[in-house]
Length: 511
Image (tube, rainbow, N blue to C red; front, top):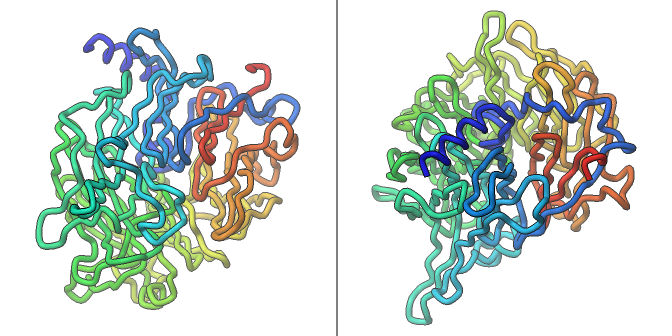
């Protein structure tokens, strides 16, 4: 087993991999080892849908990828990992050959009364008909472990109340077997109990400094819920720290449109909260509509940013936490380390990570604030000196970064206008060359089911769309769309989440 782990570590270190949501802990959304796909060959003549992985439930979690994985009895494979709302985790050969999974585990047990959580139980149908694994898992390459957060409903007869349970699983990437004595049930110490029914984990898992970080918000703001952050030791699954961001007033959930918490070079963790009361500036403990900078070891609040109009944001359901945080690499200029966060009111805040600013008397005290009319339900991406953003009811835009600020206006704008929610970009590139921006166009809040649309833009000039999956719909049309999904681009293929399947796109010469 140790030799297999060493082989995996060596092989993966030399090749492209996707271990976490948005490719890295800074959540830049960029993969820089893509040599097969270029702006020259991503077009309707040479690029399209290759095949689909059929699975047992809807797929919200971003697929993860490991090359060179030794699967017992089946040889070495480049593996794509897919998690579903039916509480399954699949490992497939990323090429689609063989078509059947290399391994598949499921956390349900009908005989023992353990099932997925029905959407009707949470009084919210935004994830329906069942809720199982929603947040993107995370992989520890060194130990060969896949960490997964899953929800179940336990029914033990008419005389026993139903239990809604959430568990952190540690799975071997080679077999899917449970590791580290797992799974462990999620609980919170102290007077406020963790509610496995009301607490919805949407934001991706984060692995940083030997800790696995989990966060929770609500389902449609239903019931009594809190914004939770918890850390678990990646080696033992022991709970190491817990933070309730709203212990006195409740609410202030962490959802971030499924984007993950971020971590900086020092291991500090960044999360954004939604609607809720804010009292921290007057000695309280509640952090509604706030970007928090937390100690990675203790989850102590080290710094924070709260807009001056937080009270209005809270009363109007205009969460700051509808967007996910992104940390830029070091820049030239006075502000070297920047953080970006956007919210439902359409404000994109550019912040100094060394001094986030706490509660602002005026938003002018931020490094910079850009405004978009219809809100931000996504995270930006960064590549080669530009920030890429697609706000709600808007088009893809690119903003050059100079001297610690974004340009006030985009240097290019896509021609296609997306609907409600916009999209979180994913960027593939070969270092500083051949950048492509990938986006999944999804349905509106209460819209009818319709196919997802995968778009590809030239990252050097996003006014130029290279390709989309509706140009040759008979060949390339994607499955039914799900909200907030992000494509995974790796090793010449693009993986797109959909209802009960993942569609795979690539160069048609590889069919």
